[in-house]
Amino acid sequence: MTEPCELSARQARALIESKALSPVELLDSCIARIERINPALNAMVTTSFERARVEARAAERQVMQGLQLGILHGLPIAVKDSHATEGIRTTMGSPHFKDQVPDEDEHAVAAIRDAGGIVIGKTNIPEMSIGGNTVNRLFGATGNPFDPSLTCGGSSGGSAVALAAGMAPLATGSDTGGSLRLPASFCGVVAHRPSAGVVAHPKRTMAQTYYGMQGPMARSASDASLLLAAMAKRNSRDPMSYPLDPAQFIDVERVDLAGLKVAVTPDLGGVPVSATIRRTFESKVRAFGPLFGACEWHDPKLGEAMDVFWKLRSIVFIAQYSREIAGWDADFNPNIRSNCEAALRMGIKEVAEAHRMQMDLYQRVQDVLAQFDVIVCPCVSIPPFPWRDLFPRQIDGMPSETYVGWVGMTSALTVVGNPITTIPCGLDEGRMPFGIQVVGQNFQDKRTLAVASAMQDAFAGIDGLRQPRPDFARLNEPLQAFA
Image 1 (cartoon, rainbow, N blue to C red):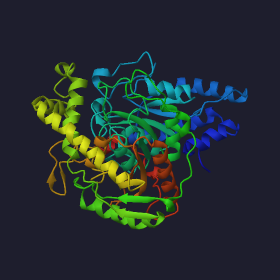
Image 2 (cartoon, one colour):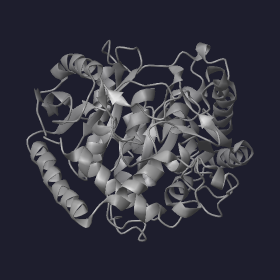
Image 3 (cartoon, helix red, strand yellow):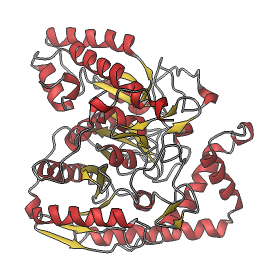
Image 4 (cartoon, one colour):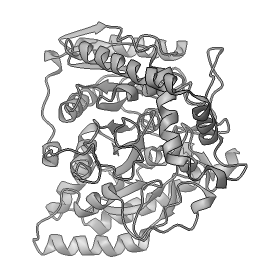
């Protein structure tokens, strides 16, 4: 029998409305799963069980009284620890903020609460949410639910693990160079990186940028769309936020894959990708290619995008951290320090040239999407690595010059800013989850999610493509046993 915590968000929401499932029953099931599994994975670092139970009982009363219910009514939500939550500790994964309890929710969290969502707790991140491996000095590492000795990715790693392990049906995340997409891929779940402005983020330190997008995570693209319907609430304090109807994401349109023309690429035209990932992706394309009306190998020529990403990322880092860097201790996240130091060495000509190349790269991708409905590519360049390594130093013997050298498949697409839904696509050669990115036309988030949802539904019936599930029987030892 399916435990309530393993229901999809849409299934649970429908059962709550029909009075077949109590929000209290659902919450208790999620809490029980957290208490049983979290010691082995360390995904949830701060819980809010007592408050959540109060809110779940209130949600139950609203159902019984026949009141109007929000689209997330009674659903437990895991919130990334970089997202401010009123009355619930928000540490940023750093000892500097270990006792920080915000006075108010940040915009996306407030929107989720307004839609009836119940914050069950906060999920682990690298310090200050910077890095592709979820490890920090405050809480330690978060292990991959398929092998706790390996990384779950980052920076939204705790959220991805919580979803894969059934601790909550929905979770929040954010993405600069792949922080939604990498952990979703490594953990066998779904994430959506929205078009700029779809999810307002007033706390960004730069007015116009494709960096630092917040987005939904779930176990299905359909559920991710439901969460996006709550998160996509406009806020005039974000200059990139624009008028749109969030209700468009509540229902996912049906898509006939046979009517689509799809471009597939193993490396976006020049991004370093390991041989094992290339082989895995090619085998997946052979399996899913016949689902489409046309599935063609195509090169979008994004080889320069990684250099552009690094240079423009450095500007963001100086804007965000220049006021605080002098107060950091010697052990503060070295990823942030190295990025800031690199930025200070750059000249304005380098920065200007990177912006110009960004425009060229953007137009190359839009030209491809004028010919194809979506672009499909791997999400990662390498399989999951041990979480003890801050980041992998090489790809098939080729050194990674920076800590983002291995995330080119996601960071290259950050540069151009199109909406991307990452969905699970079976296992890789090492029997770990393998994810693919579905890249849609700019501002066509609804369509991108719909295509991804149709693909995920089709994959469910195909050996080698269906969504993997962790073996919970193996998750019995506390994570420190793996240190």
